[in-house]
Image (cartoon, rainbow, N blue to C red; front, side, top):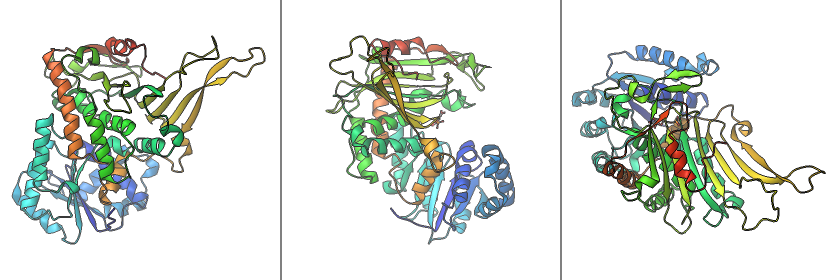
Length: 487
Ligand code: BG6
C-alpha cells in the first residue's frame, strides 16, 4: 500500500447529483474525522461559469441538505473549504485542459474522479493524456456503468486503458465500500466455526436480496435503456455473490481477491434460452403505495417516453455455481425498485439434520444465517433451542443470536461507502475496486441472460409498488420447496 499525503483529488462532474449526494459529503466527513491528509487539495470541475467562492457557497448549501446539522461545524467547514478549488470546464474542449494543467503540480499525485456519463470517459482520459496531465502515478476513478454489455465494456476499458495502466484504474462498485460487505470477509475468513461449514455439505441454498423502495428517481433517460439486471445485478449483486461464494484468497492483496472473484464468476452457470423461463423472472412496477403514500407506476414516471416499455425494474433468478464447493446449491438473487421495504441482505440457509431425535417437536425452520447489509447492519443466526418449561419436557423453539454492528460500533455512525473508497484510492489500494476481468466475466454472464430473455420474448410481469415483486418470483423459489426469507 502506497501512503501519500501530497494528493490532488480532481472531480469531473462536480455539480452533478453523485458529487452532491455522495462525493462531497464523504470528503467532508473524512476531513472532519482527520482522515484526509492536510495537504490533499480538491479540484471541482464542471461546466458552469463560477468562481471558487461561488462554488464553495453552493456546496455549503447542498451539504446542509445532505448532512445532519450536528455534522456541519463552522471551524471544520472553513478548514475544509480551504482545500477546494473550482474551474469551469467543457470536458470536450482540449484547450480547457491546458488551463487545468497549470494548476497541477508535477510532484503531487493526481486522482481523476470521473463522476460523468460514461460516454465521456474516453474523451476525458484522452484529453488529460494529450495535455500532459497523466504521469505514471496518476489514477482514474470510474463510476458505473462500464458499458452496457461485454462488447461496449471492452470498448470503455480499451479506451481508458490506452491512457492509464490497469493498476491505476479504479472502477467503483460502491457496494464493495459498504462496511458490512467487507464484514463478509471477516465473517467468512476469521471464524473457523463459519468457514468450516461453508459449502454444499452444510448449506441448502443462499438468498441475496437488494430491495429498494425508491423508483427510478427521475432517471428515465438512463434507466429505460438499462433495466434492473444491468443496473443492479451485473455489478452489486454479482459482487455480493463473489464475497459470499469465492474461495479464500491467499491474502488480502487486491490481486489475490480479484483472482478469486474472477474464478467464481467463471463458474457461474449461464442462463440460456433453454433454462431462462424456469430460472429468471422480470418484473415492472405499477402504481401502488410506499409508506402510506401513493406512487405512480414505472410507465408514468417523470420523463417517461414509452408507454409500452418492456424494461424490467425487478429481477429474481436462480443461479448455480458449478464448482466443487457449491455443486447443487441454488443461489436465489432478487432485486427491485419500489418494493415494500429497503433491505439488502444475504441469507445462508443450512440443511436440516440428517435425522431428528425430537419427533413432532422440531420447529419447522432450519438454521439460517442472516447477514443484513442495510439497514440495521448486523448478523443474526437463527437457531433451535429448548423452550424453558416444566410442563413440556423437551419442546423446541426458534431463538436468534444477534450481532448488531451499529450498537457495537465505537463510532457514532457507520461510514458511507464513498468514505472508505476515497481512502483506498488515496492509499493506492485496489482491493475494493473491480478489475477489468471481473467486469468482463460478469457481463458475459448477464449478456447470456439478456439474450435469452430477448430470444424467448419474455415480457415483464407487473407488480404493485410497495409489494414484494411479481407472484412469479414467489413461484420460482416455491417450486423448489423453499421460500424467500422475509424475516
Ligand atoms: C446504484 C443504482 O448503483 O445503486 C441505483 O444505479 C440504486 O439504481 C443504487 O438505487 C442502490 O444503492 P444503495 O447503496 O442505496 O443500495
